[in-house]
Amino acid sequence: MTALAGLILVYDRMSDFARFVTTVSNAVVCVHAAFVGLVLHSHGAMSLSAFYAVIFVLGASGALALTMPLGIFTVTFGGPRHTPTLANVLDVAGIGLSALAAYSAGVFCDRGDFEMLWQQICGFTLLGVIALSAFAWNDLRAASVAAHGPVLVTPASQGQYTSIK
Image 1 (tube, rainbow, N blue to C red):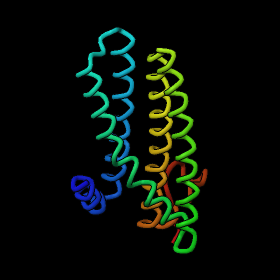
Image 2: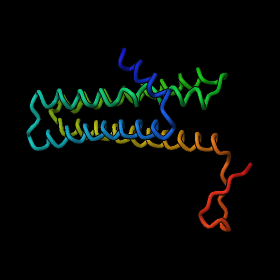
Image 3: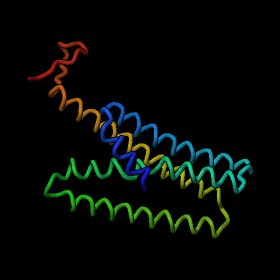
């Protein structure tokens, strides 16, 4: 918990581009760990120590992705009046997806179909990486607009960005 608090303090002091790179690279590490787990299991090389290592990397790289962007999004998008409502709606959606994932994981484990379990983990992490990358890109663009003002691109500008001020 202390490391997460330290990461939040560092994350808050980063430049917008550094925040974007940190968020996306963290999510990419998470999805790579899931795919490494799938490949190790598919080839029969998944030992208990390899399983623990993959789960550790998944958990460590998922901490930033699960805490920072969602809080920033709810405060930024919801504003002072609607932040609690948006946070609760997103929590309900997350709990619903977690219940679905836990149920299907239980079914796969009961059948002994661990390859499908790893495919499910890969699918959920890939979906999370896509959503997190979209958030990070939108956050970077919003910070750029706030710093430089709105940008107008016209056919006459031939790819040059013209600032509207």
